[in-house]
Image (cartoon, rainbow, N blue to C red; front, side):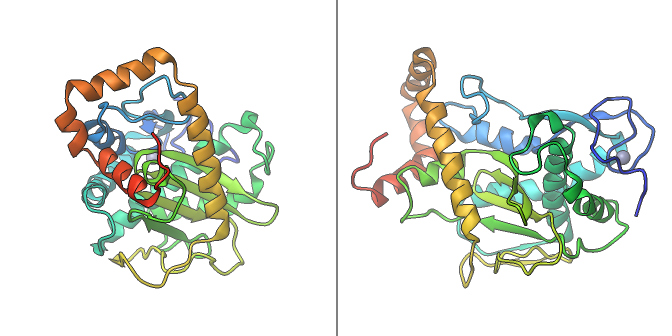
Length: 299
Ligand SMILES: [Zn+2]
């Protein structure tokens, strides 16, 4: 195991690369790949993706930090190109079975690693469970880095899962709009277990941060040799994920309620200016599923 890995990744541009430790200057790295925001921007009726963080600010390419040297950035960017094609296809037609390669798996792992590096670098945020001490995540952080650097083939106990969602017809009224049109990330932790969780529109990527327990997530394992993701079949998502989703949805509703009247008017105006584009958008489709599933639906 490389011994240079810092306890908390610093975010200074002059620090060694947070992944490979090289001394070359850090680049400003996207935590969530840019294609997620570009695609969502193109396809949403208002032309932009909104995040929970600052609902009045339309985010065009997502949060960035000084994390990686240029060669590491380039390696991640190659994986992102592969991943973006699968992501876009799934966004257009959810619920499909598809094949994936080691590069798709590595891209997904790199995203949960970036989120963990980001959280570790901000101890001032005082995590609900960890406080300022992310020591419990050291082993996962190192194991993932070794896989990303090509020094080991598989993250072992610090396994990776992904859930590519289909439209849900038995959930809360705004579930599909949350699943397919929001993007958030977090380190989720209880006293005993923790996960790095990334929600891209339509897909959840979950990295296990603590070794020694059997996976509660069945049917969503990511193989680093590549494999086939089954759109349907015998799968079980963990109960904590449901409460995670409920909490995030509550935050989203609060954020929407807090939109300024000027912003609300602007959204209505954009939709009215090009109703055809709005009707063809995946957001409209998700809304349609939400309406069909809930007779008492209201916008
Ligand atoms: Zn590097």
